[in-house]
Length: 92
Image (cartoon, rainbow, N blue to C red; front, side):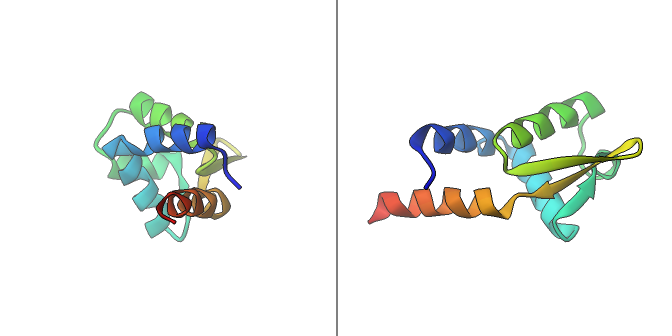
């Protein structure tokens, strides 16, 4: 079960529209996307995209793995499910 502190951190990360856009784009690409591909889709400078990706990886909503010179990003569905469960528990 997710604790309140982690849920707060995720909520703050998701409050940024650019991060939501990045998550949606990763999801569209069958849950996996390279950083270089995000540069073509998201209308932000590369350092800004890197900052947003760091925020998303710090919350564990996104995982990263290096493949040669590229970094591949994936949605972490387990953390996303735990976050949704946490939010649903507030409703009960």
